[in-house]
Image (cartoon, rainbow over all chains, first blue to last red; front, side, top):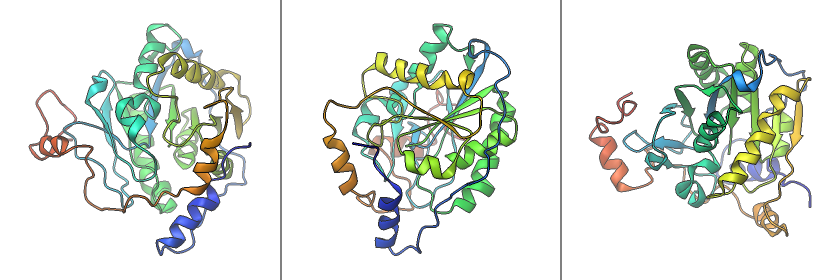
Length: 160
Length: 128
């Protein structure tokens, strides 16, 4: 069986909720390209994930086109991480956040020398934002500015 | 997430997008992607299987060194289960199980209480 097609499913969901026909982002141009400048074993990796992960004590995300960011310190105790989202079954993410926010996995890869290091903070937000314009004009530039500030050599993006 | 990838990459930061929704990622066309054919909510592995989670990320992250052309997508060699019954379920169910509340949706009431108190002193990011 081939991969699940999600585009028709999501289009139907929005239609049922009374949104205007969802205008899917289709890019037919060549994607931008920035080559990795050194081996992974010397790179500092950043992460941005859209599974709705937050730290206990932070204000949680809401479910209506939330484009806010949460900063997650990479030395955080994994037991302090929480998950909230409207679009996926949270049961596994709540017992092991690594399924959508691979913090223990990446710390292990640093210990093993596969990666040079991780940034001092990772970023989390909510996926399922209806307006691609707000993502392109607001969320993406804000996130990119933070990643540049953190001086990462590469970034792993983890949607849900 | 593909939009974020394209933005960061254009600013000079190499990116890799994990994905379990191949059609969406193909449409947005990020610079590099790694496709894991798992149910949504498991983009980087199965719960409590750290060795599998590690293998998935090693395979995926290696793309930073091996991919040479924008728009590349690697199909990761992992299967969720022997049979693929989860896929027929994924076709049937929608993401409208949860109402789109516009107030913070906490995992627990305890989290709500902690956030409303302004977070603990051991949490430097809570007041941000």
